[in-house]
Amino acid sequence: AQKVTQAQTEISVVEKEDVTLDCVYETRDTTYYLFWYKQPPSGELVFLIRRNSFDEQNEISGRYSWNFQKSTSSFNFTITASQVVDSAVYFCALIRGDDKIIFGKGTRLHILP
Amino acid sequence: DTGVSQDPRHKITKRGQNVTFRCDPISEHNRLYWYRQTLGQGPEFLTYFQNEAQLEKSRLLSDRFSAERPKGSFSTLEIQRTEQGDSAMYLCASSLTATGNTEAFFGQGTRLTVV
Image (cartoon, rainbow over all chains, first blue to last red; front, side):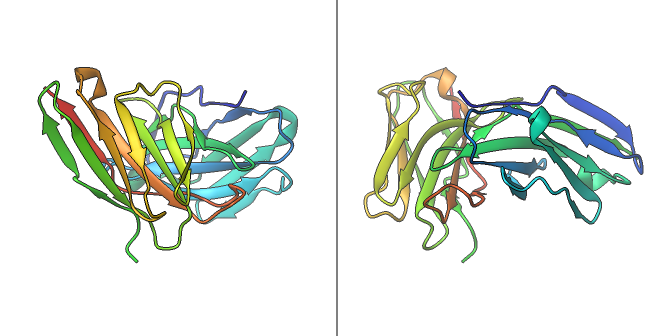
């Protein structure tokens, strides 16, 4: 069975601090894809990144970075120098092959000014 | 193309009434998903289509729910005899994929309130 676990329900940090959102996944497949989505207060899910199971190279995009480790089945997301606009709910998701997307329960991030 | 479009954005209905939601995916996207999201939870899978074929329907979905994608373009989700427990945000997403390796783009959702 597939499963995505985001153990952090809610996180609050002060602006400019770094923050890491954890994601642990379960799948028996060797080919799968992992995603992160952002859901701001407006409600629309915004795609942030996709990573396939064969590519463990970490990725950096501006203040965002992702750490994919197959050995621990984790795909963590770090925001550097956080800003108030980063306040949102963040979802980690998994898809295997030609299947449906499975989401975690999300982490609500509060960036305090 | 302006992205995935959902209509209506909000729907308030009385318990027992039927409701229908529409989703227009991004042009040429062959996969279309429906998800439901309640407060404080992640999106919960309902069903998905590859072109006009419905590939899977969640076992959590009762017989009161039905979805169609008649021409492989737009899709409708109907809920019959609505119950208060159906109150949620209904999300539609689309992607261009046959192997599931591309990201899904989501619409703004339809918020259903059953009173």
